[in-house]
Length: 101
Image (cartoon, rainbow, N blue to C red; front, top):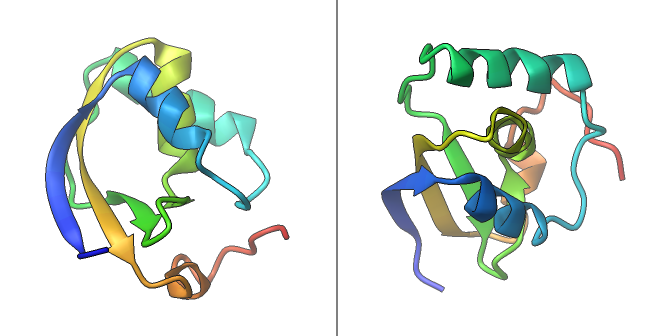
C-alpha cells in the first residue's frame, strides 16, 4: 500500500469504523478522552499537524484517544489521516508513552 496523507472530516461514525481496525494500543485514559471531547465541544479543536495513522494492513496504530473523543463529543473534527505506514511504525510512535500489549 502506498503512503498517503489527506485531510479528513472525522464523524462519530467514521471514528467508530476506524477504531474497529485497531488490534493493539494503549489502555484508554478516560480523563484524556474527556479533555479532548471538551475541546471539540467548545470549538477549541484545531488542526495542529497531528495525524490519525494506519499501517499498510489498514490497522489503526495512532489516534485512539482522539477518535474516542469524537464519539464522546458526538461532533466531527477535521484532522490529517496517514495510511500505508510500515508494519513496525507503531514501535516508533510516542515512544515516551508505554503501550500495552
